[in-house]
Image (tube, rainbow, N blue to C red; front, side, top):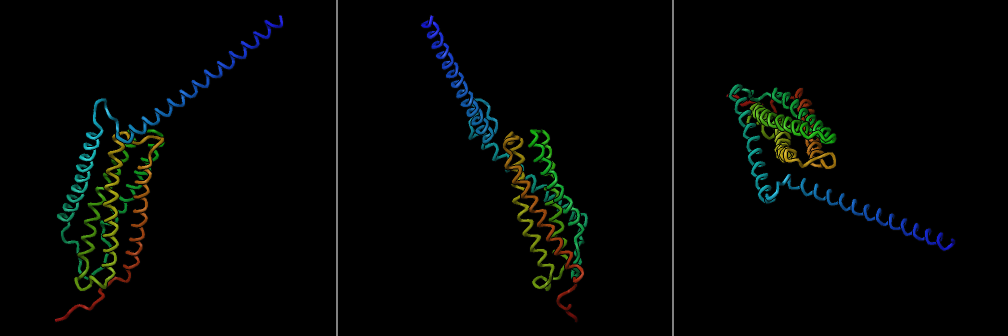
Length: 250
């Protein structure tokens, strides 16, 4: 009797060990499967969705071509918008008078709209709303294109509002330099936004990984803050505006 009970206890213990061992193997397999799925998702996100049999180099080349075409289209449309504004209002300069270009008012609103749409896009990707993410990034890119065109027209207005002899000594030149430097950074930000938008349409971002959207949004937020400082300097100089050098007589 005692021998039988001892044997049953031994078999029970061996059964428990085997069950725990089997459960441990299943846990290891599940963790391994999760790692594989995560690695596969990361690789898929890095190269976009690759159909079976498609070379990754082909997909990368297509993305590069799409990036070039979209960037060229954005800057081309911005140039056409600036040309159209110049054609509608050709005489916007008033030499010798330092004044605030009206176009800067509208471009300030457009810059705020870009920052707002990018923040909304970040909220969409956090909630895994892919279609909403793409739409909001497209709207941000549209506003950025309009901003570039309007800003070009505003800079032209600013340049025409002073005489050649005031170029070095006038406050106008300082504001033009700040605006041009800001425009240079905006050009880089537009390219960044084009890249992020194309990546979003390829399914690169999800609720776990959206670092590119965050960096792009903060890039434009910083540009908006910097533009605010430029406007403050501009408005501070308006009451003191006037010719720095006396006009030539005779």
